[in-house]
Image 1 (cartoon, one colour):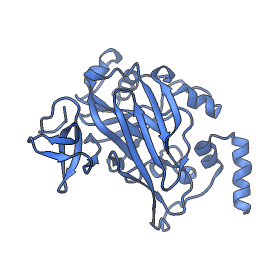
Image 2 (spheres, helix red, strand yellow):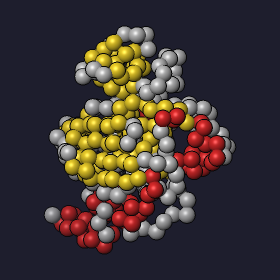
Image 3 (cartoon, rainbow, N blue to C red):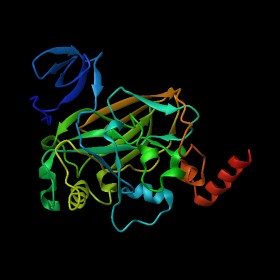
Image 4 (spheres, rainbow, N blue to C red):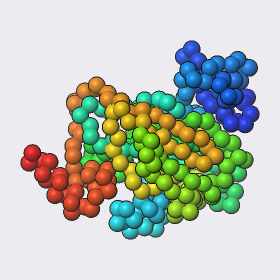
Length: 293
């Protein structure tokens, strides 16, 4: 199942053992590594169950999110990329830079490619999938004014992609029939089903691989439903997809100085519109009030 030389059948996890990434499988209270060694699950340091050459995410693809923003439905999906260094694991920390205010969760279904895809038609796209996992496409919208659509500053920081807890084989999951939930401090804050997707997983894969070769291990993030909102240090955020388990992470305050060359964090109208899903005119008014104060 893992896209490495290690052989682990069925559902697989990736963990840090003595500074080395190892694949294994969960069996009750232990994780059995590929060489048969067992480690305590409770003390395991989870890594993202994928080793991608690239991570590609989609912008608006859930009807509920488009309706929430009062936006027009795009004719086709559009995409952006996250560096592999954004990968984070189950139970890992999500770091909010000191002084930031708009670090949002986005619960998503992640797809991990199993076979090279180039020009694969929709009807065969799912045959090239290795497996699926829960994902949180974290975004720092204090930089929303700076990216102009690229999303590099907003979505590209280290650890801004928790993925896991395990990679579930494609044969055990139907991406056309699933339910997704994001839970913040025990309260469900996002909820949707596959029926809310405008463009399904097969469509997105076939669209992308027309121009971009998708390699084994590559991760595709398929979008988030309505109600993405900011998180605070101390918050516990979880993403659940029926059949894929529960990915859970804690938000911490990161004492790092982001001042220096380049764009600085700012509460812009676009920040407020996207992070809080408020109308654009209200976002403009509130951003102006922020500048005055």
